Length: 294
Image (tube, rainbow, N blue to C red):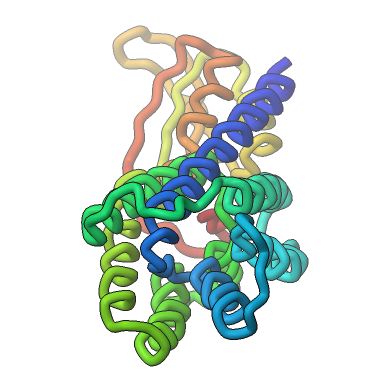
């Protein structure tokens, strides 16, 4: 029963992640693309390729924004390369999100005339809307593919690498091309979009802060331990304790995990013991054999 609930919970997360992909795509297609701005990242590269095909080679794709299709094609080899570095559950949800996001980017019609005439206002609105979409995707423990996958691979393989470093390196290339190819205003507004977009995503996304959680229970500690390890993939240490106020014996379980995993942890424990209580300490420094999840 416990694990059936967890599977249902993952289904809900996948559905909400798809909704986040729709919101992101709407923000880009309705507010950024009509002004010919570029989003940066892998999608920004796909937008540059689309511009080259349409404007320089004269290839017409009708009302379909081919950048979304290109985004999906480039993501396929990334998924294959990242499979051994990233968890299966994360990859499956990300693949589902990327496929549906590609559909949204291709099917949401780009207005012939910008919905918001003022370029700066449209740029900020687009950043807020698309940033909320990406934040929702991250909170559902998935991603929109592209740089997210590269960053996860590099951060797991190389301790000095991070999402920020990968993002900056790719965006320098994208915006350098914009600088030498398009009007300077395109570059300026594209950078403004990226800055506001990143701020919104950071505000929404629960960061990968390590949390030490102590769980106090009078029920079957071994059952809770097994459920945590099978559902979250986290190790558990527990020992016997004695309540000074109640005078009753209890078990104390210690788990180190990421902040975004706390809601799932509590659901697992409460399925076994609704009277259990927690002590959480954020930002603990964990070294050694600790699984890093982003």
